[in-house]
Length: 197
Image (cartoon, rainbow, N blue to C red):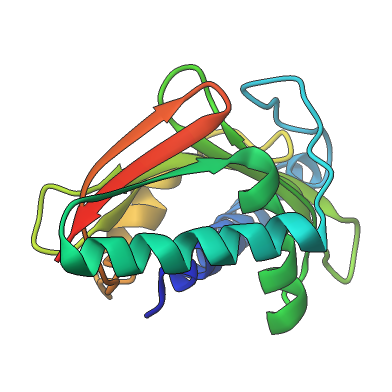
């Protein structure tokens, strides 16, 4: 998997988790079904990112340099919200995924966040996915802390049920990327990864 495949895998996993959450909400009750289609979960920050092809290409170039540097020794890359959102929008378009209005934020509390709208045959659903990467194992693992859809409450263990029953059972949260990632620091507006051979 290429480095930018890391972002793609996170988006793909997020959609699987969110679609599962939607199924749980719709199956739980008519009220749950109504709640999932109403409301917009709040974001960690109040800023709008405008994606661009130029920002996506700059991120690709930055990642290529990071991979080359990491193959020779320690390397550091810092992502900004514009670049990651731009690449995420391109990935969604390339894969024809049912998600619009993607916004990626790096939150002051040290987590990353993706917000967007899932298109359904009925009303669209506003969603938020928050988390980070766990680099403590042999391979990086997506560490999702929270998934929200509309006004749906935490039913049946909410995100814990999705993460444990769907994602971890199939190891879908494990990322096979090069270079070897050794640290991640998320601050308000940016995320910094360190890697090596």
